Length: 397
Image (tube, rainbow, N blue to C red; front, side, top):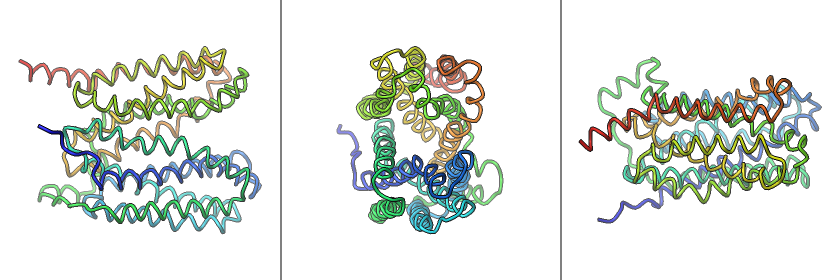
């Protein structure tokens, strides 16, 4: 019996739309602080706020999108988010003071959060259940590609053209994303009467998918530990005199994810989530240990590859688990729950981890993060892994 088709028109268009959504996010993230400081004479602290406020509003919009997407419609919600994301890009042309820039970043974050949650919800409905691990893995590569190309593109353009042209290019990219979304052909599943009543209530259950909460909590923890790389890799490589290798770190990181995702996705579907999740935690921990002990380019780049394999596998598999555990009419909530906590961990991590650096140094910080990864694996076992194993044992017996 042949496998159900994965690469449909809807799957391709949704992945393309998601790639451009994240491409603009990563492109602007690396340059917005520079824009605030160089053009608007903002202090580093205020410039950091201009970057971070985007993530905060995106988190809140993800939560509300998860609650309402099935009522409004997946494609309609995606277009609402994309149009808001697109329109607010033009507001950057008039950003001549910090308060207005913060307002723009807030609105931009809302548009991004709505659109990114919608694409994740749509893909969950498109992917055949028997190929969910593989499908989510391929879909997540759109984010991986954006995370590799976006920062490079942003830095490259900021050194050669003015910011106004960069904002115009971002608007064009989002226009292509809107076109991809318009080409989607989705069949909306009608909500049951109980689901409609549930959606209408203003309760915690309408903002959080509690069945997805355990894996989302683990995602928040791992995102917290991962934030130590995003925030402190540059000063760390400068301190250990490996700046040249540091500039290639995320390239190796992304390449490993791109090549490993199809393999780990198939293993997820054929062998089960525990088969890929436990090694993912271990590989992430080993990557952190190598990073903490890096004294040459090879070790540093090897750490980047292992961290890409570990964190990349967790993100796609974690999303697949969140979707699998949830009813079909609450997939949007499951998606927003998982990414809200994971992104939240990445967002708040630097605020706390930065306090540890003066005491334990960068090497000590990354060793501590390795321990955190092992703790996350144990927590995964307690909250999900052992239950899955028990269910498999019951099925076998």
